[in-house]
Image (cartoon, rainbow, N blue to C red; front, top):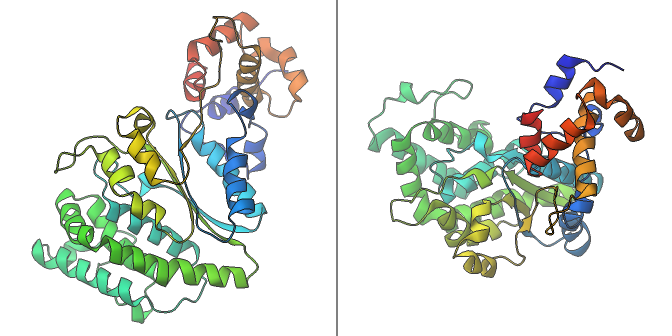
Length: 362
C-alpha cells in the first residue's frame, strides 16, 4: 500500500498540533502514558471533575517544548467537555509578547478569552472593569501623545468605547491590548498602570466575569468553567527591569494572581523552573507540584533499548503514513516509507524520544 506522500508530509508537520476532538487527528494520536510515568491528563481531569468540581483549582503543566503538551491539553479539554464543563483553551503566544510579559497581560488575556467564549451569556455591566479600562484608555491616548487615529487596529477599531453602548467586555479589552502587544512603550505604560491595580483587576475578573458566568453556566446544566492557558512555558527568561528573571517573576512572585482566579485554571510552565534554585519557593505557592510530561524513553538507564517506548514512537510515525490501517497492519507497510526497519529505529533513537524532533527527522 503506497502512502500519499503529500498527506504524509503534512501529517508529520511538527508545527501542527493534534486535536483529538477531530476524527482525522484522532487516527494519528498515540497514547504514550504507559511509558511516561502515568496518566497525567487523567489525574488533572479527576482533580477537577471528581475531587474539586465546585472549588477552584490551579495546576501547572510542563515539559520540553514540542514533547506533546498541547496535544495532551486538547485531549484534556475534550474529556472535560464530555464531563459537562465549559472549557476555554487558548495559546497565550497569540495574545502576549513572550519576550515581555507582565501579570496584567496574563489577567487581561484570560478575561478577554473568557469574555469571548461566554459572549452569549447576559452578564451584568462590569463596573470595576469599565473604570479600569477607561483609565487605561486615557493613559494610552494622553500620556503617550499618540493620535486617536493611530490607535485604530484592523478588525478591532478605535480604542474609544463605552460598555453601556453594547461593546462587549472582551472587545473593550481587545481594543487596548492588541495595540499594546505590538508597541513596547505602550505596553510598559499599560503594565505600569495595571501592576499596582492587580488586586483590583483580579477582583473585577472574579466578581464581574468568572463568578456570574459560572452561575449562569450551571443554570444551563454545565458543571463549571475551566481555563487552559497554553504556551506560557515559552515565556522568555530575560531579566525584568527590576532584575528578577521573567519566569520566576511571573510564576513565583505573581503566583497569587495565578491561583486567585475563581475558576479551574491550568497553565503551562517553563521547564527551566523545575531545575531553578527557586523551585522550592514555587512549590510552596501552589497546592500541587507541577505535572511534568516526560520524553518518550528510547533507552533504559543500563543502556538497553526501551522496547515499549520505541514501539510507540514507531506507531506514531506509521500512523501518519497509514492512518486508516489497524495498528498491527502498519508494520507490514513499513518499507513503503523507510528503506528498512533499522532506518526507522535509528531515527527514533536519534530523536531521543522527543516527539517534535522525530517528526522533523521524518
